[in-house]
Length: 365
Ligand code: PHE
Image (cartoon, rainbow, N blue to C red):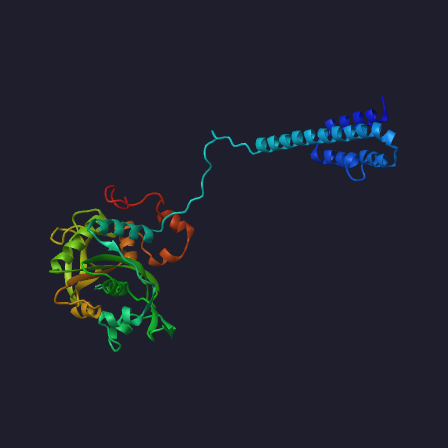
């Protein structure tokens, strides 16, 4: 056997036996790399006589390409092996049961907002929104609460130090009523909206938090009267509390932005020491009237402030605390716990994220 043949046999044996890509690379460098042994032999061609070259040239070139081919073949074999090993280690058993997915739950306030949207959508109301940072024109002046009005002081308003671009005082809205203004100044009547959202007053005890939630209702159309207001509220409360025996009392009251104004009370009875809406004042039961919300016919000045003709358009509005609605329906007794962020509370009172309230199923059931 010639030297070339011996070298070739030795190289091919080593290449076939290489057990990793690293080992194969070491062999490649050793044989056909710049300083490799076969490369060294190739360099000797230059010093040979033409006759020697004629014999050695094809031999050495054959050796070199045999080794290079063997390395390429081995390389692709090792790469395939590595891919197969990786695929095998990443195999998923599709027949295994799914692991417990981490899940959160829906806060009762969000749940009640969904329920309200569902109930009022059924009566043809759209959901409107406004910003939590308001200007004092929309929060007060346009609602017929002038600067000197005692209602401004009553609201315990959080003001910002700076004014907006139009020179108006900026504040955290004290009620959702500014959404009435935003809606009437941007939409053509007839209007039927509810506006749920956050509201803020500098007030804090067991039944008051500085941030709380309200839902505003607004209807603007022709020939609207108090009867429409009462029917709407009754229909809403019956659907929300899922009982027919809801009885309301409209008690004369005062709000600058409604005339006449009415506080709406609902009859409650005691069930296991808890106040539950329902029953009738004429029934022999232990109960009483509970104040639920403020309402009234939208003041003509408010309608005019929004650029509408109060001789053509009338309507009613109401504002109701959402947190109270949630407490009454789902039986929580401390408002502050709503906003403590305690996981035990939300795990107990929260709702399944996939359980979307619908009227047909019974909202919140
Ligand atoms: N904005 C009033 C409040 O926060 C409630 C209300 C709304 C009253 C609409 C009448 C009409 O107390």
